[in-house]
Image (cartoon, rainbow, N blue to C red; front, side, top):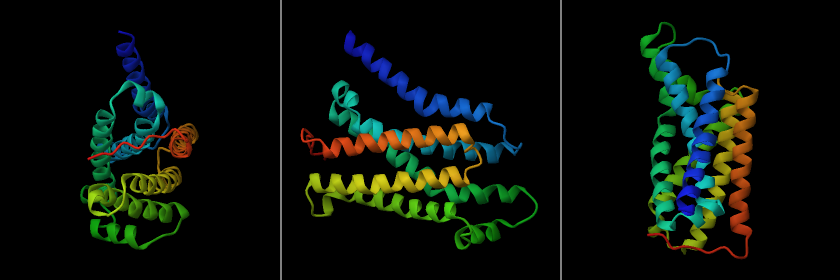
Length: 213
């Protein structure tokens, strides 16, 4: 009974932190009115960012490992990771697609400008995060073919994850239209806390390395 209650409380706090608070900050924010399509794609990308940040808490929070079996945590880690990596893969197209329904810059011209023009640090950070995302996905899918132990792979995966969340957070705050002060603070808070959890796990002498198949 107590374990069930703790699971419910953990789930509630997770939903509140990574969905509830971001949606509340989005709802009360003052943003220029845009089309439903543009706003929907922006919110989807914002949601994807927070769910990827949640990966750090899902995989490295001690409470999660105490309440849930490792295989269960790993299953959801993979589902969330692969699902929202797809969202990020199509993220550049989310910026271009609305151009098909608007006057002004043609969709192809907008896409070419997007991938060839780097006028701000945020754009460069976004490109680096985009490349790291593919590296994370590829090294996860082909882990068993990389010829390294799970312990070494996990360390490599953690390093890439830290780099990714760092560059992605900078990009989201610098370029994101919803990254007002409150939203930016929440992004940084979760990203930093998640990174600390990961580092704490790797630096802990009591860390156990579960072999995942």
